[in-house]
Length: 350
Image 1 (cartoon, one colour):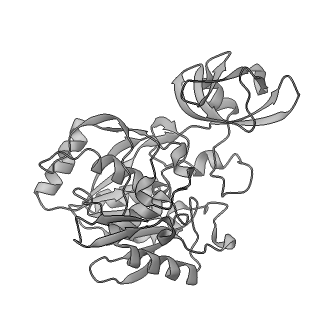
Image 2: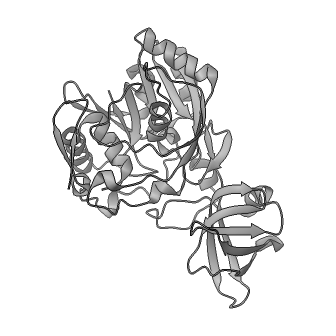
């Protein structure tokens, strides 16, 4: 058990991983997306009053206010799952590429890898596996993999979506505004936005800006320690441009709300805060871990999905809303049969 003095509420917080546990019925895990992104349900949670309201995502333009600053993550998911054959044993294998080192060199994961193992993939691609000095597996390919992935790669659906990736996943497991390749998991809060909905939001006087945070394999990394503070986040690359930093700082100085679309945007923004409370343009890796007791200095409201029990994503949301309120909201979501996880419904925390 870990003990922490919370800077925002000024009280002792006992941080146990089990504090973020709840029962998730398997039939509430969404295995497929809705045919129309914006028709998902939207639970609106008010932190000041503790009230919970049930809406639809297409109502978002009428819930937001003119002058709000909506910040989204423009990362693009790579179709990073490959199927191949181990040459020495003829064993079928799957490889998940997790981080690009160069066009022919990637970090990745597979079952039962061996140093020097040669793998043949569809279309004539070959890859050799070796372990680097940090106990990670690296795949060296016979040709440029960037183009190959677009032709032969499959979307890296999370392990809790227990089905094979389908062609439609290349469309639906991607935000409509995704532009910068680099993620092996989608920033799922953004999946609910259609182009038409974004236009309607703009018409209502809401300012829209984009940051980049490439979602890594850490999204699926379980918290294995009993003390929350003992968990270490996998570093992820994020980038905030000068014009976006200016927009955020201007909104804060004018008293306008900064609304983060997803936990990735929260981590990108809060990891760029200077001592004076402003954010700076930044590019590089962050391993910021947000859990109850964290002092939010930028984000005023959050759009997010419903997350796995005991996950760092749920801990971040609990830090923003308060643990008791978020756990009550999750119980309400189960009672009302909301759809959970990546392809599921959304929540707006005000």
